Amino acid sequence: MSGHSKWSTIKRKKEKTDNARAKVFTKIGREIAVAVKEGGPDPAGNSKLKDVIAKAKAANVPNDNIDRIIKKAAGEGSADNYEEIIYEGYGPSGIAVIVETLTDNRNRTAADIRHAFDKFGGNMGTSGCVSFMFNRQGVIIIEKEDIDEEKLMEDAIEAGALDFITDEEIYDVRTDPADLGAVRDDLETKGYKYVSAEVEYVPTTTTKLTNPDDISKMGKMLEMFEDNDDVQEVFHNWENEDDYEG
Image (cartoon, rainbow, N blue to C red; front, side):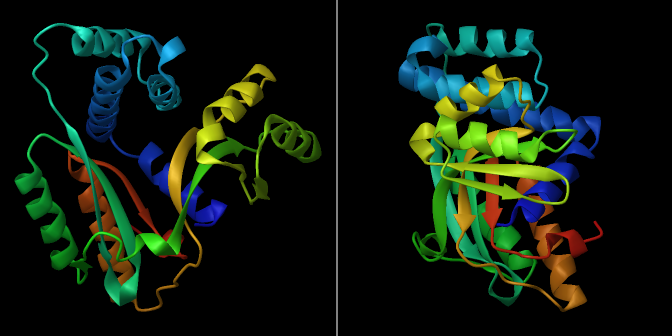
């Protein structure tokens, strides 16, 4: 995914309603709860939790909410048991799609994901059917806002970044998945503010849609995935996502 496509996704999420933002808080809450169950409630000794807290703060989740979720997840008798399931498939005209979910009911989630693929002219495939078209990378998005490009690139490479991409409105810093937290923290201590910092599936090639009906269906498919409470993230290789009017 080009930085531009990633940025259009972020902008679309930013422009959503308060109700949709509440959904984002709920989804991040699930991630925090899973991270606490897996590695404990102390972010100093739980790098996954530390990364999710950083993601929560970037999404403007209040600190009180974060603390409350951590305490609840760490408490005895917390009954929420979510498992991570990744679905793969194709959108209109063969757009590759990966859907990351956290669910407490895999039958419900599988049916919902399959329905979204089918409804908009795609189809859900088997595990591995499209993931070979993507690389796992840490992706840190920073808005330009009077930032010196050469200095940021120098600081990013020094912090351990693998690649540095500049686009119209953003800088896109790429890292090894294992190094995301360290590079993010290093840049933050140097005063850089990031819009997002996550490990993502980054496509090795992209596909452009030219048919207006396909563009509309692909956009609506992504919206349906994002509106599903069980869906955490959606990755794809649609090149011209900006063409979708919504």
